[in-house]
Image (cartoon, rainbow, N blue to C red; front, side, top):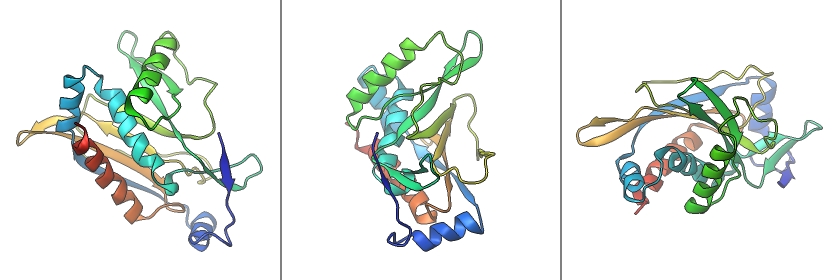
Length: 211
């Protein structure tokens, strides 16, 4: 995994970043209802599980934009990863516990789907947050049991966690469409409302484009 060390003096967002880190550590949280009708149809047509497909959709959009790939190196310097991979939960109905793992991102849908299915099989008997998670990750979780209006995650560090936290809930039928709540939390130091809104718009566009 490779990264670029950021120079705040040369970065167009450098002053904004420094302000939010030094004076106002804010995490923005937004939930938007997404139309996942086409994703569900694609899942059924190709005999693929909906959950890994949705993990790939959000991973692809996140990796398309720099604002979602910032982090810190071991010396506390701001860096931008070349790519980030999803750290996601795999829930086990038998004992109501989960495995938290990272599958390395691949831009190709079927390549990533194969990776995530292999990892889920490999770690199906573990109930833990796996220790081999890489540093270049963002967080993904799912609440498929409830159609919520809003969901918020609080990261209790010193207010410098920069990676996106993405969650979605149960999809339900409305006016002939399958509607599902999707949530993103992101630090204001690296993103604004524009970037947050673009994420949801592009997720919808990607879902609609699947054949």
